[in-house]
Image 1 (tube, rainbow, N blue to C red):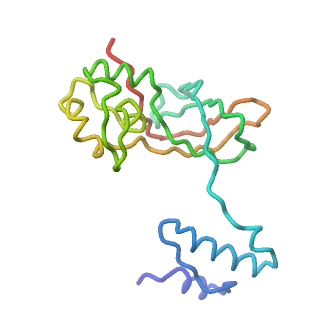
Image 2 (cartoon, rainbow, N blue to C red):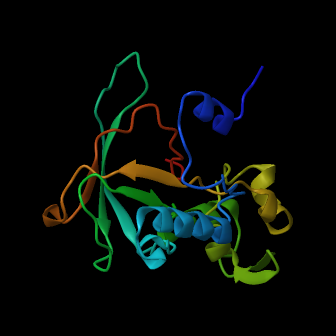
Length: 194
C-alpha cells in the first residue's frame, strides 16, 4: 500500500506549518503561495522568500578536459566556461546552461547540407532565418534525408538539452569550473567532415 507523503510524515510525528500546497509544473502562483505561507510561519516578510526567474546571460565553453580516459565507469569531464560579466555566482551555486550551437558550426553544417543560412522557416508561429532556428536543435548528419527535410520538419527536431552544473570555482577565477560531471550525456556539436 502506497502512502501519500503527508500521511507518512504525520505517522512519523511531523507537523506541517500549513496544509500542503500542490505545485503543478513549477506553477509560479502556487510557488509564491507556498513561499508566502512559509514566510508567515517563520515570521518573515513574504517578499523575503519571493522567487524571481533567474537572469540568463552568455557563457562560452572554453575548456573541456576528459578526466578519466580508459575508465570502466562513465566519462567524467572538467569544464570551464567564461560567463557574461553581468552574472554573479558563488562557489557551490548551480549554473543552468541552455546550450546553443555557435554560428560558425551552423554555417559549416548548412553549407555541407547544401542549405542557405538565410532561408526563412516558421517555428512556433515565428519566422526566423534557418541559421538562427537551428541554434538550439540537435543536428543530424548534414547529408541525411532528415537534413534535407529541415524546412518542413524542424519543429520535430529535438532541442539541445539544458544542463545543470555545480560550480566548483570562485568569481575571482574569472571562469566557472566543474569537475563533477560523471555519467553525463553530452551532445557534441557538429564539427564538419574531415
